Length: 477
Image 1: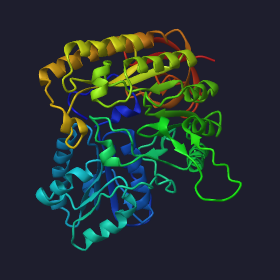
Image 2: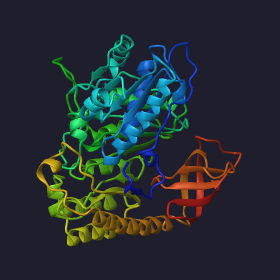
Image 3: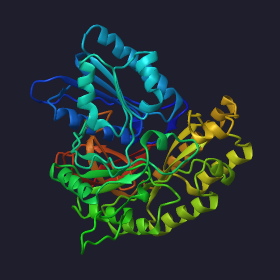
């Protein structure tokens, strides 16, 4: 992401902006594939789809791009300097390619449409450019490159969901996994490029989602995160004219309950919710099922109604606060995280203070915080002047970060002295003598290894102390 991004959350999403590579897989002889992913969880899930498509064509994988025959970088276009990072990485691949004739280098994902001409023709950094709805075409595109022509497919689709493709789990701990439930976005937030890079919203067949969750559980996974740009607007109904078919649409609340019913030992999380769409029905579904985690990511972006209107968020300050009140009323122990943008076009100092006061009102458990970065082609770039000086954006961002640091610490301190059900995800980064895992509220918990428990088990952990990002405790019977 951008240099001014600051996060206090130790979570899978903390990989945003970092490379995640394919691990080595045993496969029949063939060409070697390497994928590097940047950005949101959806990009990482898409890389798993790409891997599945190409492994079915006889590819094997490698964790060293210098050994690969085909190198892909799955891109993010949300922040400005993400593009420069990708360009720098492509130049490293170019150097490796000069030493290995025949290597194919390609760009996948959100940057594909906007930067295809630059990458393919002007800078000649890549051989193939593929948009997020065209991954099925990859074998054909690779064949075209083999024949000596650069290849591109960035067409967006109103139907593609990849529902029939079983993703290859990458860099997995064998415990947690993502399931993509929908693609695209119909919201037109003025700062966001996603509707232009991922197309219109469409929901995946719920029965394929449940089957994927069941398959993961049977393979030993114990937590799934349902992914979508706006999961709350998920809606699916049977197509066709068959008589006697129940055509009642399946909403996100219903889908949550269907996945939760796979097994009580399968935890269910989801991301991301939109404040305008999260319903009490969803909240009651969470409250009803012990294995649907009490954690909601609810991006606010700004605490000021005028700025929210400029952002085209379609809710105002009071609406957002009412939704927070509903969450706390229906799910009293629910953790809430958010996204905040500082220095949006024409934001005044008083409006910035509204964002700070919103943070005080909610007291978020975690937050992703950014200084505004204008993206070409967005509504904001066309309509508004990016008129807040960078030093003001960064100063406001610092104030937001400092406040969030205090809130994160406070929220974790409230969990000290309590016993938490923790899913053991692996060993602590700092010591193989400690396990780490997350509780229901998505807080990271670290505790000494107990040989009675293994990775993938649930353990009850008494939180004895905390840092601003982690609970520290011990297993109790």
